[in-house]
Length: 604
Image (tube, rainbow, N blue to C red; front, side, top):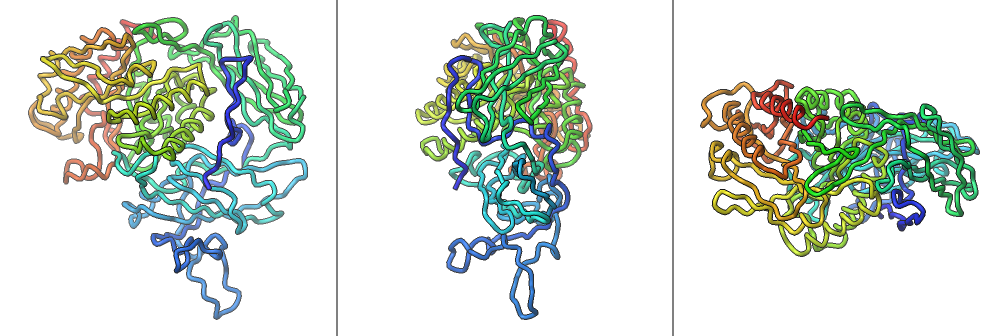
């Protein structure tokens, strides 16, 4: 079964913090985990022979048993140790040419040593597994997770044995009509254990979750809470310290192991792109101590403005996929994040849109360190089954896991509920409910969505979508000069109108080009044509009075099976401002200059 999420408990004492399901561990890298990355033995299983028997019933003696021959006449038709191996974290598509287009099941195996301790608990933590994962430890099924871009963990304290332990994970990346995302999307369906796998150990009673943020209504105060887990969680003293600010306070947990936290914030420097200041925060409860670096800032909407720390800001951004900076494949390391986000900084960005799903934790933390604001998104993309309650449950689960992981990150200012979803009553109800869930989990940030519903009348584009009335900030995807009959030069004269009185981010615009291919401004796929699209779209954007940010599509070329054009695309989406080899296109420098002017105009 899918891991069930516990009911939400609202904390009346603090509007800035809501307790959320206790499944997910916070800040796992601060616990000195046993990192299980590296080479894993694999079995490729397109017919799911290791999961179902010949009657198509779940097998009781499947590949998860990792059986070995003990007698020469035994029949065992798989062997993790004699077959291929794949690196974790990583996708299987770019590690083995046979798996480039593969959608199906691959079984992963990793053995590791462990010495139990009576006063310690242990959890397996998966950064992500795309898309469905069944987890087995020492031949026993211990967990199941659906969703390819959010973390999950499983307590294994009672399942580990002294000495060698064998972890086997069945990963299936097949697209599903009732999935989030659904069967149709425009990025590569990278399968596998695409992010790190960790064994995290804790004391018997430990700090499972915490959040500390400036109160949006009273920003002179830090509010939040600490959630303990364990047999001695109730009535336990908890200390929260920010040494640099000379803050040290003690709180006591309630009967559920939760301690509401309130600290003075006067004198604390505010995190911003100009000064991404973070403070060391030390949390301590009994034998457990956890350290984080947290920035403190406010974000709000006031009319058509977005205010960061009380001052209007223009979001100079770019969209990007979680794909390695050079070539294709999932980006999973801090080094890859630093390269990609470094290119954004080079382009004079203060903002990135992490599309179209939650990116890995290294990406978000690196953005925070570099002073880049973040739009974070769940893959409610195009035509998911909005009428299906099970699909909504999947979307809400992914939203919850995204918010739980990143709600201490000052860089994140926008939670996005969807991208380019078609109008319907079911869709509006689905996304309105999802927005309400986010606001309940985290009322300190803004909610947005990327809309693709403009009405064009006599040179005027009208924002015409009832979802714009639900979100705080309106995202608009518009590809004037690339899709549709208009040539790029027709874009500059267009005007936009909105009756919603809210800030708008042009969340996507642009066009494709093969780096190094040149021609005239009318030659499709040339850098010249792409630059013309950007030149005339930027002229249009300069005429939108309520525009408060842009995130053109996209920073870097990325793989997509929807893009087969030989010699031009070759299964790459070529809308990147940077090529798959890391080379800048002409349009990159147009955005760089435009953002330089915006920075001079707006500051930050």
